[in-house]
Length: 259
Image (cartoon, rainbow, N blue to C red; front, side, top):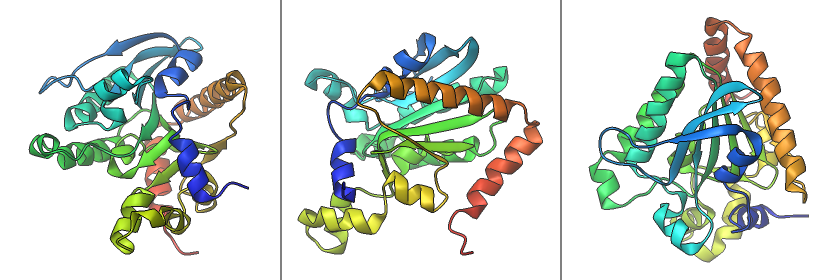
């Protein structure tokens, strides 16, 4: 049986499918959009328009890249504020044209460099959370690898949040937690257990809505994701806007409630 830290290591595995892999396998006619109209184009966030069985959708995801050169160019999936502003720009366009939004979450966290802070990293993340709460279109977010801190949450405030069975989702990395609590990053395995960051833990708490089984045959996993997306989006689009927003609000009001 895998421990929590085993799942952390699996979520970080370099052979794990990235957002681009899911986009290519699940959608058709993907057209990438670039830039935040303020500073530049952050390659750590990939976003654009696509078709899901003929249905127009907006797709957004963290992208870590494949080889070392690409990982460096994409900052290993850790976005700067312009990446989150690029995502928000596409979210607003999706709302304007009535397109559902699908997000793929895979980041150790938002980039914490000096430049990112100078350009308003915290504000960019906060603005995404604020706007995602009130967007008048369905939002489905899927944690496919690491879901780290506010950098992940900025694409994960959704009507439904799903996780692959070996993905993780946490307020902080196990190493960061261990460094703070025990002043010893080697205690990351113990921290992983304390953080309750696995898909199974989060599902039991009602924080996520679905666990997607991972199959050695990735084509089966992609088909499962596609089938579930079609079903969920059809169900959400059948709701009135008022009902959609009410359900989203109530979903987050219930998190952390003691029954």
